[in-house]
Image 1 (spheres, rainbow, N blue to C red):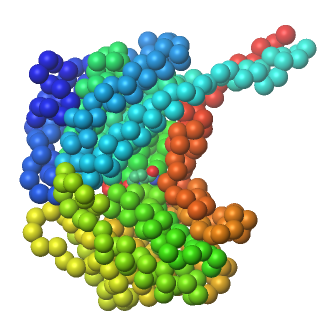
Image 2: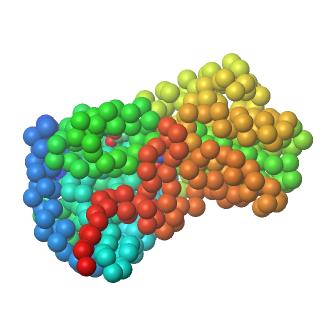
Length: 477
Ligand code: NAD
């Protein structure tokens, strides 16, 4: 970073390739503030040659980085966590402007990002002696893979970036990061921080116009792809990685069910369900996207949810007191509006749902009751602040309906009885089930999707090991 370019203080953004901060050879892409529809900044756009240069730089840096001890690599990751903490005052408003989330949410994202780096870096990859007897000593070591391509979405740009970068680098790999084209700015600033900390080429950050993902996923010198995004794009990534048999971690879409048992107090449960569905304006892969409530308390839960939704303040995330910002981009905004229109025709909108006049991609928290399971809001991933509340008669029926999805990312179960909830959790076909809480994702606990929600895990010891190759050293005695 040069002397004038401090994170968030300058409108000048640069790609990081081979240790150098450079402009985009393909020009720039305007990044739009979703609250105002005004341009936040012109983001440098890499061309294919620069994507290839970034991979070449990562490949060249790999041997020396892999040769460092894990303690040395950990120490530099800790410096990155400290640098993010030291720059939150500049980074948070930038994140709010490009992503839309309220400023408090932006500070929270940065705090989770640095905590994740520290938590992930605390892991170790020691050799394990599998056997040591008269005939042989067999040791399992974990070697790095090489160049990792990290491709991230627009809902939590910084968390998604560092949750791939930290385990990749800790394990001895080098990386090329490509953020989503609608939220690249904070990632580029984190790239500038990386430029001051890591040897040239260890971390490279490029930005595109949604056109360079394929270059990375098919590149013969990329060993692994760590991807978070939609299931549709995940399928393309997998196909593109097949010819060179790249390792993959795919964190994809979800349509998480929340199952409410009949022993809860509607007033107590409603704010928790509301948070589970609406956090980050519902733009969370693990948000509760279908709420199953027993007949007995259905009307009471619906009424409580409608009350909370009607009181929520929606607005520009830079303003004080705003609970929810806009949706991140126009395409998502139009998609969610169409899903609401479909829901209006088939069920009852009991809060929100009104059209928004004026600039910005705002949708008020919307609660819908009485929908059939065939409605788009129930069977598709809405990825927005719209919550279908569905009535069930028996718990078996609720579990069957929850499981009848191509997705299987997360789920929540809400009950006064941990034992009853645990039984339900055991029957849900998802990678994570939370009981009486939501989105608890500490860096020492892995998460990942079943079915078409993903492939592999992030976080935890396993999340780090996914950036390694098992290697066996088998000595004759
Ligand atoms: P997306 O799939 O459109 O884009 C994700 C990234 O992939 C972007 O960087 C994009 O530029 C890139 N990309 C686009 N086409 C590509 C291609 N052919 N090859 C390689 N990369 C390509 O997803 P999005 O709209 O940015 O994010 C929303 C989706 O992400 C939702 O479905 C959500 O559930 C999912 N998500 C999942 C998790 C998780 O951990 N499981 C977390 C956050 C978001």
